[in-house]
Length: 239
Image (tube, rainbow, N blue to C red):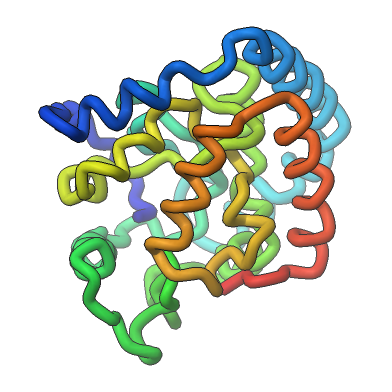
């Protein structure tokens, strides 16, 4: 979804085995949590400083290409389903609706094949999306639209590494075992981003998120960050 308004819908409650699955994964190694947070603070602060000229240039390009703000802000759900406002560079027209994306995501979660003409086998990717601007296509292909989330990382709402933060209408249709994704903070990159990105199926992406939640550590985060660089530079698996 990419729209100019934010949603304040409360996160759906988890019950029964969904809550148990999430709570079981919340016992991740506490000893490594401080190291992961230190890595987040150090890297995000350095990148925000070094990339400031690029961030300003991209903001200008977005404003020149289409009417509206350079930044897009939207309520997503993080660790323990706590809502927060995610920051991204705007990649869509300001009057873009979200119903097409809502239906597309709900069909994917239900296990339906969207078809080659409509979207990729992976999550939240609609082919030839008319809502995306010219600059937006480039930003998405290069993943540069995610850079403002470094501020979310510095604030502690996100991590550099973790599952992508979902929208409320995705979570409303989650199967019980998917709630384990909320055991850790959402991230800018993660296991599935370095393992094929949109070439993976939705279930494969979720399984990689759950694997990360079970095995999260400082060294795993560092490994994923290092492998993210060539994945982004060469657009491996990008839709």
